Length: 446
Image (cartoon, rainbow, N blue to C red):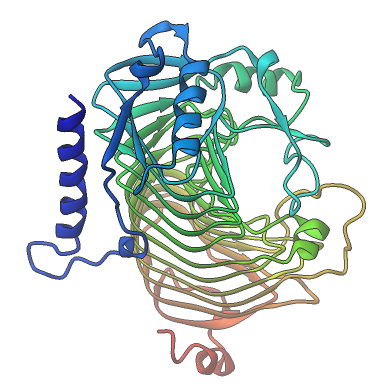
């Protein structure tokens, strides 16, 4: 069995190399930033007493297997194989130089005993738990200071069983901020691929203070009304590649973040060099979002070939007074959206504050946002772009955008405190985007 896993894993490596190219030879991918290593050393969770009956608690099996990987340090790392079955477990942490491999039919399922969930300190760029002051619950699968970690398989499932946490949120009985499904902190050279993630208590995949991260061929699922179940949230991270994935959750499909108000300003780590490509999904909130926690800065974000259905907002760039930080050089192109309340929303008054210690005069800078080749069907409101009076949004460049409305609903574009240009945009946008100065500022973008 384990030898066959080795060859399946080696096959995935070869397939990922082949998928650099489509049939036409023009397939584009950013996934080459992290190599897909295969491991010569393979162990099974069953070797450590794992039982996939959906009832047995496997926490010790996971911890012992990962302890073995960490301390034996096999050359080239170790693959931990999860056979078919349902493996119930409490939260556990990964280690460097390992592959967590889920076979077809394998499910790693979180327990719902919240009283045994470990607490960890708040992120320094947030200053407190995102929902409540103080510490926060550790993610279901956690990692800190890791190198060379792969989470992959044959579309096995990682199930957060989040409904108990969602109900606590609805009933306002939470004591601390809910756990993410997966959070990797201060880590490098990470691959997450060919896995189904479902029912996260909070955000699904949260790489924070990370670099060189590839998230590809994943499916992320949560009920439409599940609170704050963002799909993928790269946070104060660089060189992140998100491709070829399907996301249907209760919050933003992808949201790029970089810290919260005075804590994010002080920590000062931006999100930069992030590519989002060939992502499809639906959400009551946004398809692709920047923010609203952007205090460390968000720069050099590129998204293309995005398909959004039954969504609140197609593209959402959101920040607020007190955030500080700069949002620069954002490009989104080749986006299709259908059954969307608002097509494009760029706003300077979105998001709450961690406490009363934020500086209301710390105004964000939004400059150089290019949106092009966007087609929408049944879009109620084409767009809203509202900057900040003392920090107007500049260089908002729209081109080749056609957002078909819903008869009898919606209205025209709405804009204020913004400059830029528009070329071949239907319905015709606001006057602020048609000034000669704005056209000059966008000449290289459209």
